[in-house]
Each structure stands twice: as structure tokens, then as C-alpha cells.
Image (cartoon, rainbow, N blue to C red; front, side):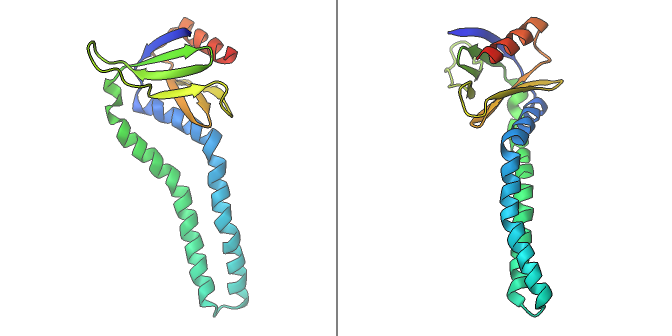
Length: 170
């Protein structure tokens, strides 16, 4: 049973702000862990090259480790840029946010007679790591499986309070 339905338009900047919150909460630590998996061997190879500078394979391994660490840290930026390009057509679309007892869903509003599309995003309150965060422009609902960014600019004070309460009770 749905408790609340809101219509909104989300700009690419607002969606990316929600993505940044999601990335910092759930994915950033794994970026550091993956980088550490290459930094530690790199330090060991550096030690070996320091002791024996003619160890050519050590230099090659250091170069590979440095390249891997650079790629690991550039990957989130590349993902964000790819998402930004994919979101260019987002401003023309209207979305409906539906809050129920156990989940929040976002669906694209289709014109009359149009084919109904499946929900664009679903976050279940019982998912692992479920949380909600708020910035000046966005109310983000997140779990390990995904996130939903609801722009606060188009919401009335009543709708925003109802959304906060519904997420807290869920």
C-alpha cells in the first residue's frame, strides 16, 4: 500500500549529487582497499629495487602497480562522467516517487496511452545498509543495492516532512 506519491523533475546535477552521496557511503572504502592491494606490493618492490637497483623485473612490477593504482582511482571519476553524459536527456522527463511501507520507488511518468515502464529505481527499507541523507538540494535514500535522489526544490514543506517520516518509519 502506497503512503505517499510525489511528482518531480530531477536535473542531472541533482542526480549526480545523490550519486556522490551513494559513492561516499558504500563504494569509496572499496576503492581504497583495491588500491592498497597494489600499493603494498609496490612498496615491497621498491624496497627490493633499493637494495638491488639492477633488478629490472622490480622496476616493471613497480610500473604495473602504479598504473593499477592510477586506474583504480580514476575509475570512479570515469563512471561519474559516463553517468553525466547519459543523464543529458533527464531534464525533459517527469518522475513519480512512490513511498510504501517497505520500499521507495521511482518511475518515469509516461503520457496517456503510452507503454508503462518498470520502475527506474527501487530501494527496499530492509536492504543491507539502508540509510537516508539530506543535502540542501537532494534527499537521498540509499542501500547497498542502489539509491534514489529526490530533488527538494520541487517539494512542498509538507511533502518533504511526509517523505522524511515515511522513510524513518520504513
